[in-house]
Each structure stands twice: as structure tokens, then as C-alpha cells.
Length: 541
Image 1 (cartoon, one colour):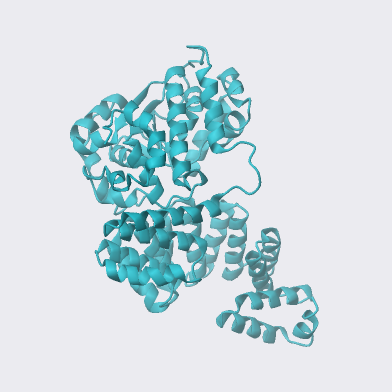
Image 2 (cartoon, rainbow, N blue to C red; image 1 turned 90 degrees about the vertical axis):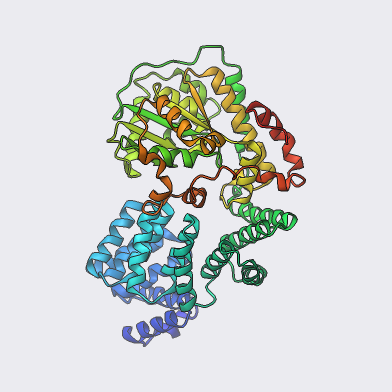
């Protein structure tokens, strides 16, 4: 680099460090980090320069080089907390989450008053879906520093959980420290919508959406909030336009890079054709298998169908351990779902040959924090309905609870909620994917030896006690009074799902039918959904 010589030559390391610190302090961090990398390249062999050079490569998303610099920093200063924080950030970006957490914990142990590893730890835990752990880490970081970021993350998580009182407190603190912080502004707008201060929320959101300060994800959140505001103020045309704009941002963020060998919709069609053509009663029934639990329950269906409520109700039983939307089937998906001939291999596999996939399932469940030490284990992941043949082969005694909700409410709810998935990034895509998942599920019902028990969301809302008793009977457990306390449990055990605010609000039998206000906007997809409206017995209007 042509500028390296005059920047570095003749300057003492302490002068360079002061220059780097000043650049970071004045908002020119990238320039400071670049200077640190130039210093390292020029031969300066001090830990702090390697640490800053690590940040240089992290900012450039060159994570292997960042790790190299961080390891060099840690080698030169093994008891330096900042070096271990940099090391943790590098491990995290390379997907080595356990190593990252260990590095953050080491940094915290070395300097308990250093806020950055607490904040870094919170960000990693939030990404992993450990909301309670993330909140604890952000709270510790907030105690240790006077920076806006921990409060902003706390405000955002509180909004996602429907805890608007906490969101307001943290958003106010964020904006006191950084008056134009976009996350603080978005959280405060969510609070204002909840408090029905719609004019104030609109005045806050409108210039924010029109500005260039928002990152794409923040732009999507702002548009979604504006849609909620328009919906609450009976402006469905404007609400629909805002929701559609939000989805367009998500589509750009989640669209695959490069051509797909098989789209998600094509995969569903391929699998459905396979099972429709399968000779009757030819799917292997399977025998008894070893299991750490007495009852293995899978809660399946489609997002926004009521699976979260069902899981949270079951979680209140003292004999039930529940795992929320975690991937424990990655090898089985790679071997049996993704390849064109994978389903043939699944049917031909021996019970003994399937043991490694069973072992992986329970190993990954433990890694996700599920001990599997209670009689009943509930695995809630709506999209695992696609994996039913894998479940049937690996766990032939499994109990399947399939959540059913009015398809029009399901699709419209997926459209208006901020769910970052490629398959759910457009109204037409959501409807077609719902149609594909339900069609595949129908093919499974005819082909698999595993019984599938429907749990109607509207019935659970209308007759909670009766429906919970029926579900308990299906599983083979006695109903317990704590199963009704799901909303209260949310206060101490937050969940990582778009349904969190609704679950926190308790039962609401009038929550259905919101699609009707958007009937005209939904016209093109209502025809796709009509067969399922009829199949599940919902009224035409």
C-alpha cells in the first residue's frame, strides 16, 4: 500500500496506538484498524496491534485472516481480555460457536469490568436463539458501559417478546445515549403503536423510512411497523403496501446466491409425487428402538398455525421437556431429503444403519440445551412436517401433533409478520409453499404408518380445558394445572418465535379472521388456499 511508509515509518508504537485510539474514538475506526494492520505488516510485534488488525479483517469479512491476527494477539498477551474478545469474534464468524463462547468467557474472567465480551456474548446467544441468555449478557454489558448498543438490543428483544414496558425503558435509555439510534427509534415506535399513540409513531417512522440511515434489516422492520400502524388505524390499503415492501426487503436479503438446483417449491412437489406413487403399506414400519425418553412428541405444521401455543401449553407439564425450533436432522436432510434419490435410500436403510442419525438427533438436542431427562420430550418445529418420513423411520413410536388453523389466517399472518425466510418473502410464495407443505402432509397421511393427530388452533382458544385434556390423552399424560400458565412463564423464559407477543398476551379467541379486511388484496392467493379451507372445514367467508 503506497501510504503505508509515511504512516508507519519513524513513528513509535505508542504514537501509533494513540492515533488508532483517536480514530476509533472519533468514529473513524476502520481507518484506525487499517493503520494497525499496516503496523503489523511493517514488523511491529505487539499484541494490541494484532488485536486491532483482527478488527480490520473482521470488518472486511476476511475471517480466516482475522483469526490469524487474533491468535497472534492472544499468543503475545494470553491474559489480555481484549485479545480474547477479538479471538471470540473471529471464532464466531467462522461458525465455531463453542470456541467463541469460551473466548468470551475467558475475556470476562480476565476483566469482569470489560463490557465488550459481555456484549459479544449476548449477540452470539441472540443469534443462536438463546433469548434469555442474550438478555442476561446485554444487561451485564449495560451495567458496565455507557454505550447505547446493549440497551438497543435489550429494547429490540423486548419488542420481539411483547414486553412493551421493558422495551420502552430500554428504548428511552438508548435514545438518551444516542438520540438518533435507529434500533432505539424503531423500538420506541413499536411502544407507541402498542400505546395507541399512532400519530406520534407515524411521525417517528415516516422520516426514518425515507432516510438512508437504516440497514436493510432495519428498513424491513420499519416498514413492518408502519404496516402494523396502518392496520391498527383501519388503513388496509396502506398497510398491505407496507407489508409488501417489507417482504421485498426480506426477499432481497434471503434470495439464494446463484441458480438453485431445486427450489423449495420444486422439492415439495418432488417429494409429494414420490409418496403419491408409493404402493400402499410399503413404507417400513420399524420396530422398537432405544430412546432416552418414554414419549417422543413432534409438534408440526406451518408457521403461524398455532404450534408455539401448543408447545408452550405442553411445556407447563412437569413431565414434559420441550425444545423450540432447533435443527437436529442436518445429516438426515443431507442424505435423505436433498438428493434426488434420497427418499429411496431412506426406505431401504436398515434400522441399524439409521442409528447414527438417531444418535446425532439426541446429541444435537443436548447441544441446544435439551437434557431429555423427563418422560416426555416435545420437539416443536413447524417445518419438520416436511421431514415426517425421516421421523417415521428414526422414531417409529413418535406421537405427531399437527396444528391446524384457518389457511387464510396462516398465510396472511406469515405475510405481515417479520419472518426472514426465502420461502415466506412474498405473498404468492407463502401461499404456494403452504399449499405444497399441506399437499405433502396429505401424501404422508396416506403413506406413513405414523398416526397424525390434528390440533385445531381455534378449538384450543375456544375450549382450552377440553382441548388440553384431549391432547394429554393422546400423549398419555394427566392434565396439569400449570399447563394454563404459559403467558406467565413467558416473563421468565422468553421464546425465540414471532408468536412470542401473542403468547405473552394469553388466549384470544377473537384473533382469527384478520384476513377478511384484506380480502381484495388476497384475491390471487385465496384460490390457492380454497381447497385447504374446505379440507379443514372452515367457512367460505
